[in-house]
Image 1 (cartoon, each protein chain N blue to C red):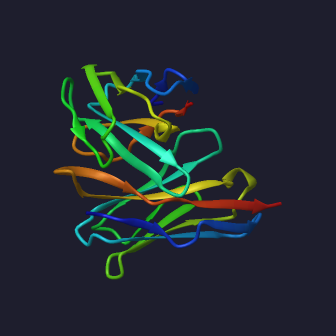
Image 2: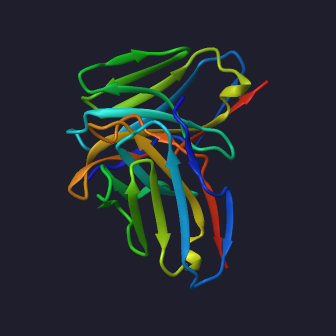
Length: 113
Length: 114
């Protein structure tokens, strides 16, 4: 079974802090994605990566950056956390060829106070 | 770009009945669609997918129907069980930000009445 793990299930940070969300997948998938999920808005794509050291902006990249130094690991960085970044963050991975069947991690619920 | 919408935010079904969850998409060039199930406190879980060269695809107790003419797809769950209670998302593959990406609908919460 594909397994996507995220470093924390719950995280509380203060405004202005730098926040790292880590995602690791164990199926040698080329593609990895970061989404945020908010009530009434569904899943929105923040960033994705189709290869190591490669990244592309999704629909809402402002305030975020990413890092993909190894194939299995994709990190989401909030350079200076703000209260409007309080959300559920979901990481996903998929096989090459396109963002087809994506496997999701359990999510990190981030609260910024 | 693509937009994906679900017709109903909530759906209540009696245990044992069939459930139908509907979804509409906007981009006629979308060629791939997925249904996900998300249980409380968990990440979305793949249920079934369909490509645009198909009208119907069946899985275990689930069927996805695609009507490209009206840009509509539906998920049918046969003999709905309490374990089917979850939020269901459809997603369509469309072009965005210069690359192909999945666009997700907002979800329909399915409640199964015992």
